[in-house]
Image 1 (spheres, rainbow, N blue to C red):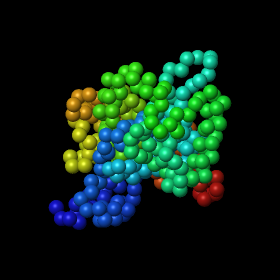
Image 2 (cartoon, one colour):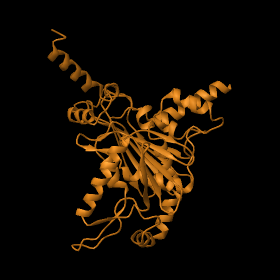
Image 3 (cartoon, helix red, strand yellow):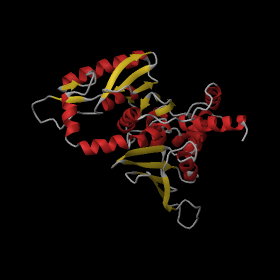
Image 4 (spheres, rainbow, N blue to C red):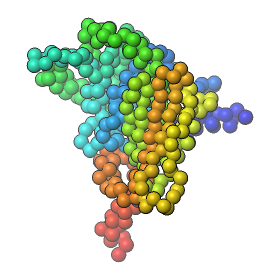
Length: 349
C-alpha cells in the first residue's frame, strides 16, 4: 500500500470514529508521522474516560449526537469531548455534565448517605476558553469538555454550587486527592473497583470511537448502560432503513486500529421480508473482551412500519439535530414534514 493511500485510510478511520472532518484528520496525520488514528489511553486516563463515558449517560434524553457528543479529539494523554448544546428540548448539556460528573456527599439529617454521588474521584481542574477541564484524583489524567462557552460553564458551575448548598450536598470535586467519603466508599469493595479499573480501557475505547454510532450507521437514537464489567447498547432505526450493523462492528473491531473484541452474532432478522406485515425487526450481537471479563451487547432495533416518529422527530429538532442528518435517520417523517411545509407556504399550489 502506498504512503498516500495508507494516510487516506488512517484519516478516514479517524474521521469516522471521532466525528472530526476528513480534511482535518488528513492534516493531523500528515504532521504526525506514524500516529495511530485513535490512540489508546494509559491506565489512569482510561479510568477517567470510563467515568465520563458512564456518567454522561447513554440513557439520557434525545440529543443531536450519541450521548450528546458532537465529536472527540483523542491523544495518548488527553481527550477533548465536544458536547452538543442541549439535552432534549429543555436542558443544557453543561448543566447535565456538572450534575452527573462532579462528586458530592449528602449531609442532610433525614437519611444516611449511601456514599458519594456522581463520579467518584473526578476533579474539576479549571475552566477557560477551551472548556471545562476534568481530572482524576491523584493522577495526571485529563479530559476537556468543550462546546459551551467559558461564560456558560462559569455560570453553570455557580448555579450548581448553589443547588448543592440548598440540597445539603458538599462538593468533593475541589479536593486535591481522594476525600475520606470517597476512600471509604472504594474500600467497601476493593476487588470490584480493581476489576473496573482493569477493564476501563473498554469504555475509553468506546468513547474515543463514539462518532461511529453517527457516521457509519444511521440510528435516530443510541442508548447505552453499564452491564457488569461491560456495556449494553440499543440502536433504534426507522422502518425501512438499512441497519448497517456489520459496518459499525467492523469499524469498532478494525484489525489494525480497532478494539480487541471477539464478535459473535446472536440473532439477525434484518433481511428484507414482505411476509411479516411490517413488524419490528431486531438483531443482537455480542463483542467479547479477550480475557472473558466482560462484553459489549448490541441490540439493533428497527421500528415497525406504523411507528409514529413525530414526537421523536420534534425532540431531535429542539435538541439541535442537523436537518440533513434528520433526513437520513427519519426520512419518512422528514419527507411528510417537508411536504406539509411546502403546502403551507404555497410552494405546491
